[in-house]
Figure 1: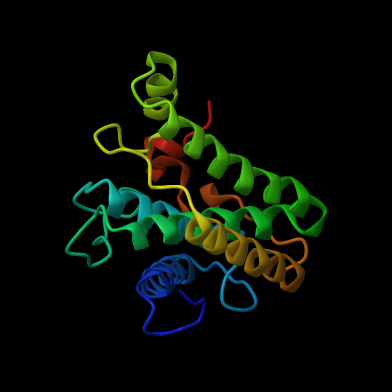
Figure 2: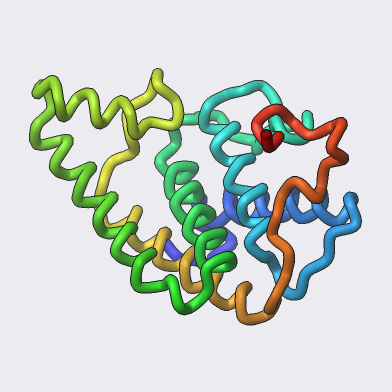
Length: 186
């Protein structure tokens, strides 16, 4: 497990998702400094989630999903945690870092407790409610999940500092008439 290690399976998913999301954002005329920003990380997160959920295509863009032989791969879950926190750090910046670290550790603790109480109707209901894909259980809690989330937060804060005042509103990439239902605001 190593952020930036080209042989690490989690990092491979992160890089592939950021590259595909970045290419899509650039094709829409979006500009940022550095490897990523809040919007690109959020797009990459959405791509990883769709890959994990086996949606058949990236629902926001209609493009192909990430290559994987196993959508339940724990490395995809770790990429999800990394990109979630990278987007949060890039949008919230250093002033929100403490709250984000608390979320990382709190989420991990919740998953630990849910596993301890598996079979309890309330614990099972909460575990089900937290799932992105209702057909799959949550990824396992543990130090790897925390590591990747914290690395994502660090990189996101660096993205925030490189891109002060950037507009991270994803709807700007889609003309109003072509916005996916999930993005339309009422």
